[in-house]
Amino acid sequence: MSDASVIFAVGNRISLTTKERVLTFTISKLFTPITKSVVLLARCAELGADPVVIKIYDPRFLDERFSTVPSQPSRPWTLAAERAAAELPPDAFDESQLWEDEPEQDDVGGQAKRAALWEEQFRRLSFGCFEVELGAYEHLRALQGCEIPRLYLSGVLLPSDERAILPPAIVIEYIPDAISLRDVSGDVVDARIAAGLVRAVDSFPAHGVYHGDVNHNNVLFKRSTPMRAVVIDFGCAGVREEAEDDETWQFNVDFAGDGVKLRRLLKDKGIDIVDDAVSYETGSSDVASAA
Image 1 (tube, helix red, strand yellow):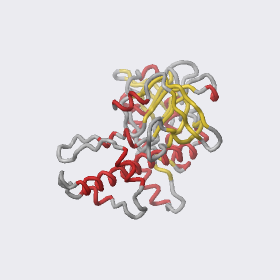
Image 2: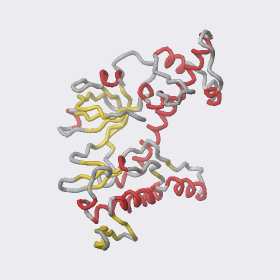
Image 3: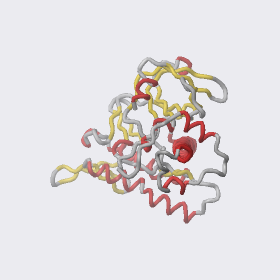
Image 4: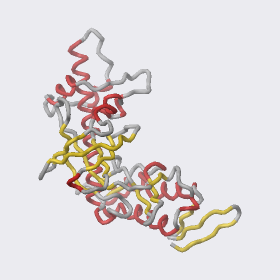
């Protein structure tokens, strides 16, 4: 985290390269904690006056590096391990080797090999999150700007220091005056907006997507006019593969349970969604509002 707070400090500039151009952004805020991606609020003159959100999928800052289990050591990023991972032959990565006994401390070669394997694992995790998030936004294009943020572009970060990889990134819409479902009061949520969000989430599978991580923090409500309810963070999403049959896809959709989870979260706020109707629980009685 200390590296991230320096590299992505407020006022610093970063550059992303796309297929067409290189864009420079000035950082306004680093969102913490960092989990699967580095999330920034930034501005780019070429994209207009409004701030945007940049999500950078850099394994250097992946939260899974830092273990909370005594039997499993943390694995901080090093350039040496990243270089070694980048040089691994395509068939050299075997995930099962990650869970073998740790090499002895005096086994320098064994330690270096294990570090490279873990570095490759972290790269695959980070880049995999990028691929599914980008794929989800592309499949859900019809909902962008309404129930999900707009996707503006994707590209790769041009690092400010020496690296063996170029971390991928997306740039999406920033939604001002938005608070998470965790912090919103149920009595200020418009009935039509709540029902509309549920319908949108229920429609994800028809677009070949499930979210996979619907929780209080990934649902935002914009309080100012025009009010919006938005689902964010598709880094754990599933995108249907061409060869995936209907039965397998439906199993994965049901297991993700996006609609069920969203209805439960709303109900916990006193907003009960039943067949496109919203009822607000007010003590012993319900006040129903058509959606």
